[in-house]
Amino acid sequence: MEKQSITNTSSSLSSLSSYWVRGTCIGRGCFGTVNTAISKSDGKVFAVKSVDLATCLPAQLESLENEISVLRSLKPHPHIVRFLGDGVSKEGTRSFRNLHLEYLPEGDVAKNGINETLLRRYAACLVSALRHVHSRGLVHCDVKARNVLVISRSSGVKLADFGSAIRVSGPAATGKITPRGSPLWMAPEVIRGEYQGPESDVWSLGCTVVEMLTGKPAWEDLGVDSLSRIGFSDELPIVPVMKLSETGRDFLDKCLKRDLSQRWSCDQLMQHPFLSESQSHDSSYAESSPRYVLDWVNSDEEDEEVERSEWSAAMARILKIATTRGANWETDGWVDVRSHQPSEEERAKIEYSEHNASLNPYDDVADESARSDVAVYPNRPPGNEDSAAEVPYEVVMILRLLMECMVYSRITRVSYPPKLLSLLLVINIVARKCCLLMQASVFFLHM
Image (cartoon, rainbow, N blue to C red; front, side, top):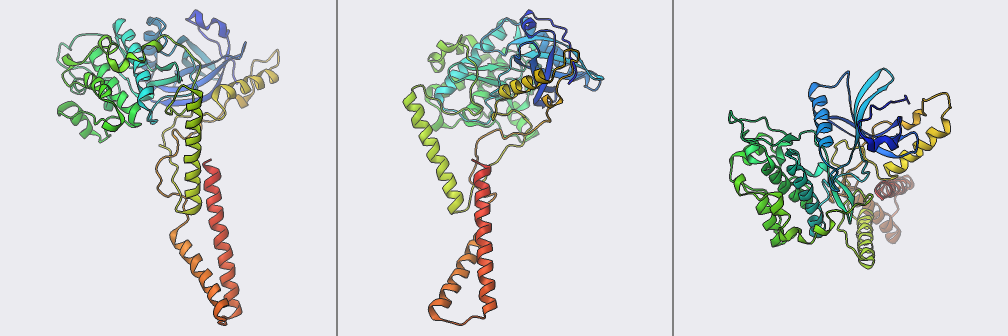
């Protein structure tokens, strides 16, 4: 592990000392990569977003520099990921431009449908964060569940990824702007290239609330057809009536007005009844929460009841695997590299301990075990119940037929050739063991 020096531009990073060790990769995308990082002086863990200065595209470096500039201009806010500093590090023969951020090991809220109680709290956090951003003359431009990171069940979430953020301006003089952000979350006026401002963030907020509620984007990804529906039709995202109260649907209605002049501002949304029960959490901090956002409750008794219910459901799935046609435990296939067993913080501290144990006072090169390869972890709990590693129906029928033949031969004393009986017995035993092995492998792989 190469020694890395930081050109520190933030006093808040002074406690992390002058040197740090790059840890595990926890994410990568068009912007570059995100790794954990460990201070060599005290073992504190933070996140570092980096681009390789020799190989990155100009747009990648521009996005990172833009995010650094925006975060530096924003005052700290309880629901915006904390900016710790930035710098350039030389690692071997490569140089990296780095952005240092607080580390939230439990990840984002994408693809984990949540209940309305938690949805109110998370929505209040996002509205508060966006109100702060807009008050500084900025537009986030990329509000979506993937950029919403969990703090804890009581403290809510933080808004992240300001690489697409811009300064507020009026409609383009030419009548056209360059859209920024993710298409499925863009407002109609952004898709049409007309305008991108605070009102556009409010539309994206509405789409994100739908996404947090359902566990999937508000708009189905149909390519160009999706852009046409968002930008040039009268359609609105479909909100499941059974999952959201009338107050919640009214909140979304205020966010998802196609006419941007009719959309509520964040100041107005903070006064909406849907958020009134959550505003008391606006200034609270906490450490971290589980990777998967479940239907949290507050009392210990209710927590125990939820745990018993989840255990019963898990046992029911296991029973189904063992007795019927099995279940499919899918992943969505995207590279997120964010582990929860053990946690990244625990792993980072282990790496830091190994680093200290092997550190020579005259050698700043750390243990290479601290740098691990990128791994892909599942991003959501068990999905649908379709069969992936199932016991085929035909195998079950063959087993039953073999058993019936053998029983019939004993009852009727029909004399089968000894070799045939031996073959039937061997096939029966092998087939039964194969079925048991398949069931056992599915059980242990998905506990």
